[in-house]
Image: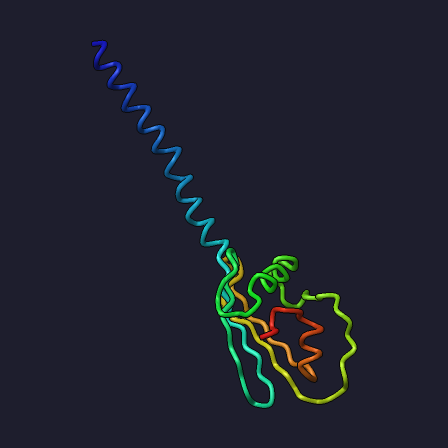
Length: 133
């Protein structure tokens, strides 16, 4: 009878461990997905477009300053409209309409952003390194 009692306790311990660990593994897996940020960034100027991919957490992709761009986006929690690098905004008034857009996900949430500015200098002043490629 002692052996069956020990066996019963062993099975109960394994079941308890499985119940505790499985939700933790599921939460960790979904947490990893929630932290993923993958963005397709496009700048169009004079009818010529250029596009890069920016991944954050960790910073990667073909953006030339991925780490800096990700840091700037982290500061504003991925809200492009809140980007303000604090750089001097001494831009000329030349008219070279520049459009910037972002599509993808930020920490698992869909992103859709577009802005039209008078010239590339104003884009840099408004968005810092994020669209500087």
